[in-house]
Length: 429
Image 1 (cartoon, rainbow, N blue to C red):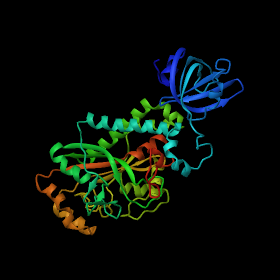
Image 2 (cartoon, helix red, strand yellow):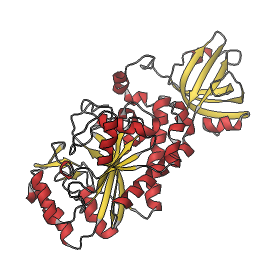
Image 3 (cartoon, one colour):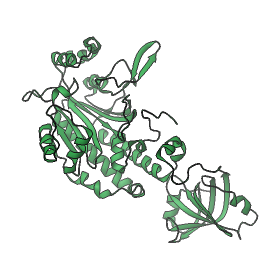
Image 4 (cartoon, rainbow, N blue to C red):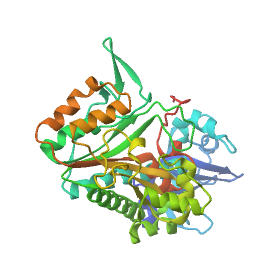
């Protein structure tokens, strides 16, 4: 007997079909039992009639939600059914009787995180994970189509790439090491052999944050390219966002509908060019919103959200104050108080998606910045080596994939953008 997926059965519309999956919903009457069967592709109503299964009726009546079952029968149109078709069951095999499923209605978000291993079966999380898969595939396709090589760096590293105590420590055979925050320094070494590289890899930041935008373990899409200046880099970032969104709209309309996502809020991203404004321009726009930000301060979440009220597409904010930026972001030669960097901010209150910059290649300037940030100069000898031998201008950025998924799906919390979220207070299941 050849089994097909529910999506194929729905396309077949009539005739004999055999499907298999799990009971998503079940409704029992005296002489009929209505099962909504689910698999990875869709859901479908299946009708058991007591007149056909008198001997097996007790066995059928014992079925509960999430029991696994194989079903054969005739599919036909029925507008009353959840997906407008149903199967009149003619034969079946119960694979497993599920126990009473612990997830019902009106469960709190924390409870659903406690039973995440089971909540993955919900149509909501299933839809998000399908979109997430499309996002990952589209990122790979975009960079490979542009001649970038995929490059992998270590997860365990000897030091940090960002200032501040946001590192997870690892006891590495008695030596203190860290889980990576970014591939950047390894990537900067690799561009001298591959020139244009990208990765999608897990990164770890021990930020004591409980916001709806932060995870301690997340997936980072990162880029590094020799000879690229800031404008080149922003062009790549804009093209990437447009490509990913276009692929999701092409492949995941059904999932977006299940999530209740208004695709009209995604379509401008494909059709319109993204604005590029400077930090100074951003401050002037915020002032009109009665938000007075002192020059030199980085933009906080509330200020980013207020700024994005002007836009319905992603926006690149460039040339932030140098003294609030990481040591590897170079000063602009014409305006030394600002760095040649950018943040990409997302509409609808979803905040920063990408941070990127040109890279400083002047060793003296790097050392000055490290001293400013009170970093140990001797810890960065390998980084100086990168720039001692044939250094060239280069640039790179990092994109938080879960933040991208969060915005595409219109989620309230980033924890739903990954199968098993890790936060300050959650490390299981």
